[in-house]
Image 1 (tube, one colour):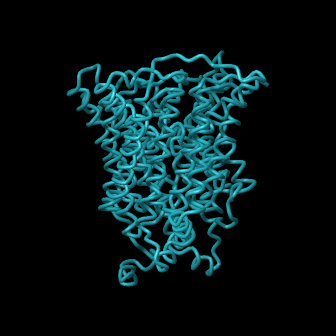
Image 2 (tube, helix red, strand yellow; image 1 turned 90 degrees about the horizontal axis):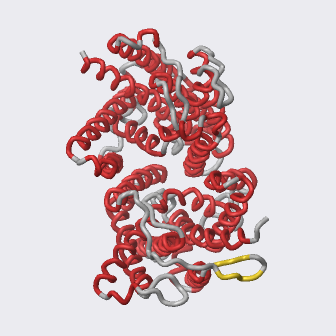
Image 3 (cartoon, chains in turn cyan, purple; image 1 turned 180 degrees about the horizontal axis):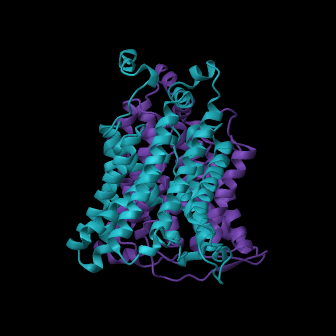
Length: 321
Length: 304
């Protein structure tokens, strides 16, 4: 029974990463936009939602005790707006300026989480974030199971929505811009506008993931949103297969499993005083894995399914070849 | 306003500038934003520290401080070894990772991503080998001497500023006056055309890594000497490095140096106004301002 509860807990966390991965897939997989500040967007979502839904606290501003759903919605608006601003600033320029700017965003947001004690609780973070189904907290099985279902439902909604969008004319235009910007432009598509839209949509989904995660765990601190997280999510998408939404979900669960297992292994094998040091080996493993996949199997486990239009059904294949 | 901020800013700016020169060169010649560059600084500092430890074991006299500095002859000697090892590290990384991707004709952004992965791995490897505990080149304490106008600096700090100036002048002459420099500029303008005209592109790439890694190692040693050596020191410098390179204009050596000094000074003054905890945000603010107002940078060409 305990094992089942743990499995549900593990899967729920993995699925929150799957949501982030789906957001990144819109930005990178479909549009080719390199976001190095994922942790910043996820953290923003978590903090915005937490500030709105936590009960009133004397030591900081915020704490409106609003319902969780409103927090999620606000997180999406915040993440989308931030991504929109970044997009407007950099998407006209060469592609790696976006990478550098998003990297800066994550660093700057990390400082805000750390230093504005009156808003974010500073280094101590924010506690008492309302958890869904908190009435059942005593019964680990029911509580974890219901939260797993809820998170899985969010993943499913995101997945279906994105699949629908990406098969729509808008999605086709996105891929056209990614593959050949000049040709897309010649057909009357506006590449900058399409990129900004995709970037904002991805940012909103990442922030939603941050909010879902924060409410499931019930506590957030600046240390949760380090560049490490950005890096894990990238590894997930690249391993799973960028451009493929199912690949994004699979990669998230797989890499999170590798992460959790290697963490458990390290705490078994190494003595307590060496564990912090050995934990850095975990990161080396993921970093090397990312480079190896880029070198040997850049398409990931589940490669992108090439399709021209869903109305063509099977005939898509004939057109490709 | 405390005039001491000028000295503090120049010193931090020297490190940032030297690092940014390497970054701007790889950016304009290899055509990708290299996220591992910050870690080259950290690796340079740790490699030099290791060589210095070995040298100190061979000849104990090398560690004795040479007046007026806080370190002995061992450190400059070890820095030669550190530079050689850092160069070997970057050339090795280029051979097994970046060069392979380049040969396959991979998109610039894929190479950026690979550099991001490699940076995480390199940094964590440092943490594993040397632990997160800070290390120091020297235990000697130095008294800052008054320079007038209410400014003070230690002999070490003045040496760092002087060494930076000498390196920048030498490098500027190399790039503007020598055949190698001409070849580098040709490749940064147009690699395939330069190849057609008989420029050895592989050689130019190698020279770029050597200069970038050498300067990164020296910058890392300077930061290690004046502050401390930590596995994350390079990562913390990454955003200032990028901001300095973009502020100066990608590909411009004087621009990168000037950009570094501006960022260093801005950080030093801002720390006095808004507090040290916001230091890391300064380079981000400058980056955003440059992208909004003058995306090509101070010395960059339009449309770059």
